Image (tube, rainbow, N blue to C red; front, side, top):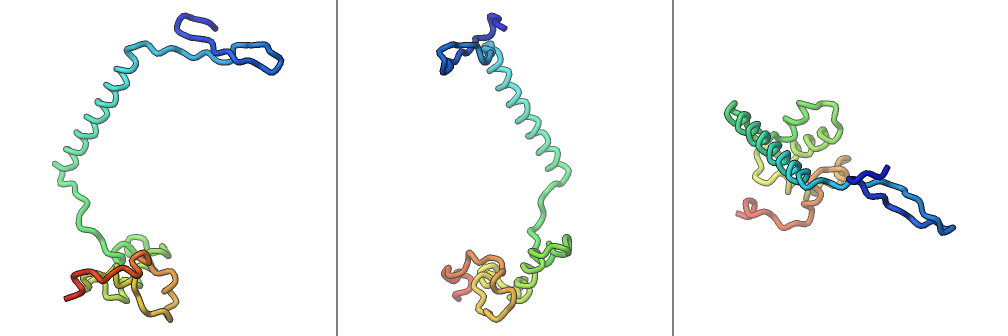
Length: 131
C-alpha cells in the first residue's frame, strides 16, 4: 500500500533483493498539536479533581503507626513483625522509634534478623535522643 501519506521502508536481504516491509504513516503537522492539547486537557482534569477532593475535606490524615496498620490488615506477616518490633521498642512513646528498631541490640530475639528499618543500623544517634 503506497499512499501519499505513507513511505515504504525497504530492506536489503541476503540474496540482494529488496521488498517493502513496513508502511510508516507520516504524521500531519496538526497531530503534534492535538497530542499537546490532550495532555493539557488531562492536566486540567487532574487539577479540577484535586480541587474537588480538597473542597470535600480530602486529606491523607495523620500517618499511622505500624500497630494501626496491622489492625487494618491483620493477616500481613510483614506488618505483624513491624508492629511487634515497634511495640517492643515502645514506639508510640519514643521520639526516634525507627532508629531504635533498626539498631536493636536484642540479638536473641527471633525477629532480630527480619526486623524492619535495618537500613538505620549503624547510623549516628538522632539529635532528639542525644540530650
